[in-house]
Length: 203
Image 1 (cartoon, helix red, strand yellow):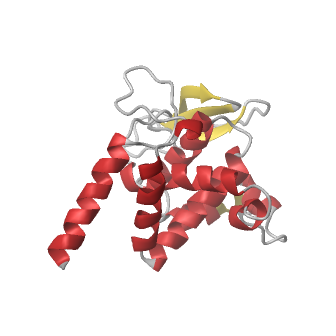
Image 2: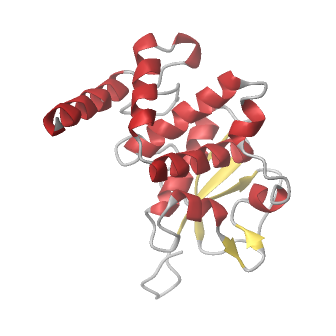
């Protein structure tokens, strides 16, 4: 049984690489995403199988990622949604941030939420699932598809943010130090941390 499950998981992973999630325009992108309108029917079944096989903890992590994509980039293009997902996971694997998706999304430094929607929505108890499945289930499924692909393949898919761990909207001008511009996607400008002078640690 273990061998069968292992073989099935391998098969599913291969299918995700063959029929990945969304359309990205990027130079030398090793994975080209399918447009949502042309999504392969096999892919939908594969996504459902993968989701059902996630542990409860993994499902919770995935929902936190879905919420962050929706509230941070709900009106952004597909590449912008993927970019927010990548930044979220980049932080998880960075030694200056918490080591889980939900902890990264919920992080506060002082009284400042790292993702502004967490402070703005703190009294409403809204989630992407609650908001979208009542009227726009296709949007929810689209975002879940993006989140699942980044969640499962963060280390191997092309990072459109070029390693970014910070971003802000293009209509604000934060006074950030020790960051380096990487790219602009949609209305968001992305940055990665740089070392502080002679310090061996980076932000």
